[in-house]
Image (cartoon, rainbow, N blue to C red; front, side, top):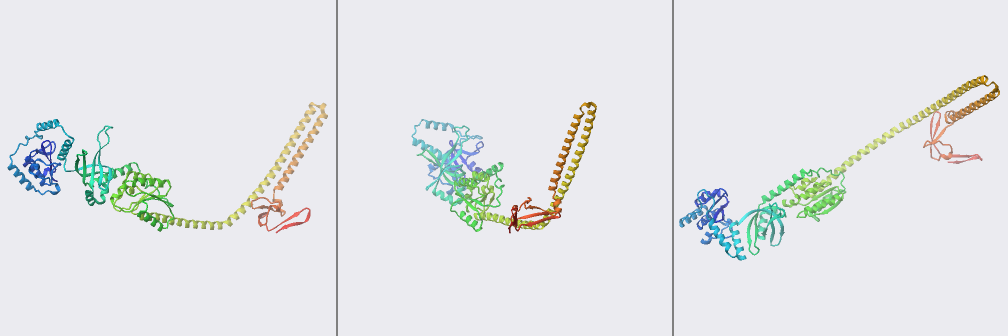
Length: 599
């Protein structure tokens, strides 16, 4: 690392890897300031010559825009670090020559002290400057001289890119840093204008190639080597980019990515889209890619070649650039509302820098929170972006994504074929079983019908017997009760109403008549019940050769008008049932001997 120096409060401060050159620094009279961790020596023409020679030999030199006292007096010109020709031996010889030619001066330090004893001189100079009347030009020139002297020719600066503007003559943006103040009114950013001229831009493009896109992004935090310039006309300090620290930028991007992944996992969103189920039958595909792109044509051609019967819903979105993540998020939201079965996000190949648009936090959240499975095919083989990590499935290319869907459809078709074959075999087996068991079921049905008829006949016989027995019992009980009442009446009449014998006898006759009427009524009722029972009971009729006819609905048939040619009729006999087909009917009429026949 080269050594540099600057003039600070009438002292020369040596910067850089001073440890390696501490012996040389001691030889020229420099002292190490332990509190500030720097080497210092009093400012003089002789010391400037020694320090200049030493720094030039290491590839360094003075920090600032103006010439030192030694350069001004000896006519030396500033040599940048990239073009130095001194060696340490030459520097040492120059220092020895300078020491021999001029008497040594007091460095202004005492043993163990770290401050220079020139405060009085400095105060005196400041008093003179305060008394002087300045013009604006003089003030700006003086400011430029101070900045040139105290700032290094180039320095590494860390900041955030804001207001990025790419023009024909170069790239312009602001280096920003958030203020550390706690005051609400003073919140904001500290900014300084930065320029990359076309000539330097060509050098950076040749050096960094596609990685330059990782750095030149709005809001990106970078570390850059800058040269400082003070524009007197605008009283403004400006920076010129000389180089970028790509490792710092990639490290910052990696930290942002790691932070985003951790945040998604803490919110249980990282695996949410992968936990969704891909439909067995995909009928509607949502595609997000650039319109008229190679990725679009590759995906469509491969999908058509697979002969898949699906409907495509296309949403056009740029696959790189600042608006790409925003448009892809909008596409996901739109396609979800259109109720597609799966969403494909695809693009062609590209550099690692092109993938940074797919590490966007809003895009990652949109994929994680999507209710539809998302298949990402970014088209990059070496790196994986967060959009791919959180997607339901990832493929390398648009063609591979189309193949994945085609294979999924083919697998479902094969499963459908297997299900269809199994269902056909099951139906065939059920048909044969039904055919074999049909006769058995019909026979069982006939047996059950006969058994039901027999049970009903037995039940009717039992009801008839019980009814007759109950009626006789009631009649016997009535007769007995009547006899008892008659005896009691007679006894009472003879005992207490002898005088009314005729009236009692009349009442007796009346009671006997009424009893006979009741008995006759019950007897007629019994006869009617027996007649109804005989009418209901088909047994006697069946014994005489009569039959009971019923249609296919089980309804009794009383007239030829209730049947038509071709109807199915069941005829019940005493020993079984006949299934009859009606081939014709003959209508008879009481008014004529000839009937009407229908064949």
